[in-house]
Image (cartoon, rainbow, N blue to C red; front, side, top):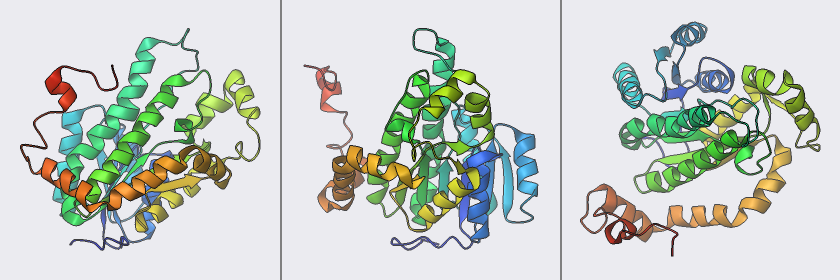
Length: 301
């Protein structure tokens, strides 16, 4: 069933969430389930996913998959579509943080690991779900972070990855709009999760950095609140959701012009028609970018 473009009725909606065995992913699944949705909890830890799904009682499915595995995520998406008869909501939530370290000291393999999960993993999550979500007129959410807006020291892989995830989510929104579906980006400050306890609270230097954040930016929220924020944003097809509220002024100041441009582009029928032509394989839209044809690099002289 194709959903309303103005608001998404979650009663009976089929939802896929990654990193759903714990933390924000699990709490988002709970919030969606409470609104009547069917939820597929995807996690790299199959036992954790199954234990989480069993706590729902009904309308829940556990799927083991690693977001770094492109074929595995395609298979996981197909499994969910087959089990639920379609797919209307996707929440690309799976993410990790690096071991604390400056660029001078960090392990390059850790840098690659964080980007593999937080960026490529988001692509691997949304890519196989695009067609069923378009068919359902559904909604996708990319979970980014306020780290995409205000980076800090000794955690650059995370900052870089969340900035990239944000841009992927914004592009996804504009592209899905051409087909009657929608997408949004979720931004959170510090959320109390197992990951936060390990990477911030248990590390004296990281904890000291956190203590230097001014109020209200230092205010923490629970994973349950983050999940409710995402679920409410899905219902209203929000292009952006953010918590805690103390970050709003900073995000508006930083992103007012880009946010306005996003909204204008998402409603520009001629631009959306170009997206549709490109997706349909129009020769003028898919023959490769001019920079590729000319052997130039975007942004270079």
